[in-house]
Length: 341
Image (cartoon, rainbow, N blue to C red; front, side, top):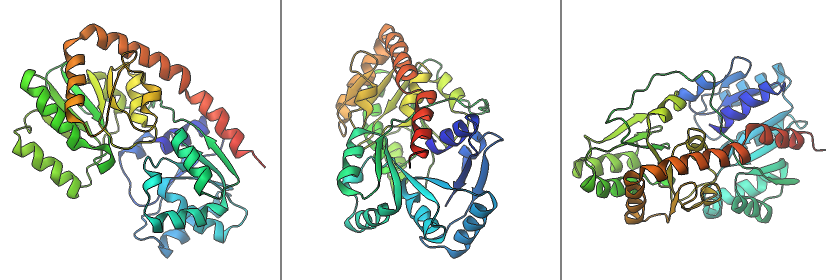
């Protein structure tokens, strides 16, 4: 999502902008504005010669001089740098769990980082980790921003009863810890059987997703927990939700949390990554420890049972996100980084 937001914002700032999807396409493609160039590599392996030739041709055609690589795409950027030495690499670190990278992956990243001009980190912990472990020229802590796309449609109608919906915007991946959320929601349902849980995010149909679905079936949650996969109409989905929740066990700075704020949703989040800097407990939301279903359930129950707090928390979170995580502030800093010598 951040890659799409940045590509659109760059184009809006009169910077020629292109987005390259390396391995997979999805609904986020529909969020790109018409003035953003787009390339899909359909990369099948770490070193895919067909995909790299396709990328090289695109770089030449559009005279690309900066590659802004997100997360694991740093290696593709590195291979491009080997071919075109004049290209500048900016690596955007969203890895909430960088400090626990496997030794082999950390070694490769450290080696490759010698070719980076700048490393951007979405939270302070990642920023300090990068400075200690990588070999880039510059380092910058740059919090994420959120924005709603004018192309957002109204496609996805959430099931369940209106004004009684919990929403989790997160791809079905282990760091997001949906199982912790499902355990908490099972406790919530014991007291509030009319509430439902809505999971919006890509389903990779892997062992993690299978475990989630098995838990739902075993605990009779299929009638009140709904999975939608990846959806392009985020703003419309948020308008239908009552409470936003993230149950992650590791994070950088989740864009979903900032989107909850823009939508004025009251939130419950786990104390990981930068979440507790965005959400101040009992001021603009509730913060609970990760891997603790009972605490998560208690916080959800509090918001369910206290409508006045929901409204106040939602308004306060909106003010914080609008003031401190704006697109304009982000883009000003990003363009300055691009222009560093």
